[in-house]
Image (cartoon, one colour):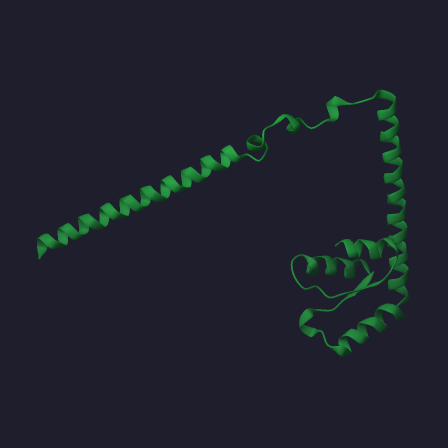
Length: 151
C-alpha cells in the first residue's frame, strides 16, 4: 500500500501485479480510478507484461489521472502541515493539555491488553471442554455397562 501511495503522490502510473492479501483489492481500486493497469498473477507472462507497459505509458488518460490524483494528495499534504503547525502553536500558547492525553497511560498492562478478560474466557472455554469430555465419558461408560449386562 505504501508504494502505491508513493506512486500516486508523485503522479506516476502503475502496473500492478497483486500476489497476496489485500493487494488484489488495492490493485483493482487503482485500476478503477484509472491510474494503473492490473495484471493477474495467473496471466503474467512476457507478452502481458510488455502489453501492460505499452498500454500504461501510451495512454494519456492514465497519465492525466495519475497527475490529477497527485495534485489532490499534494493539497492534502499541505493541509496536514498546516494542522501540525496549528497544534504546535496551540501547545506553545497553552502548555500541556492533559485533557488530550490518553487515559490508558494510567492502566496496567493487564488492563490495557484486557489480559484478565482473556484469561477468564480461556478458563471458561477450558472448563466447558472438560465438562463435555466428562459428560461423554460418563455417557459411554454407562452404555458399556448396559451392553455388558446384556451379554
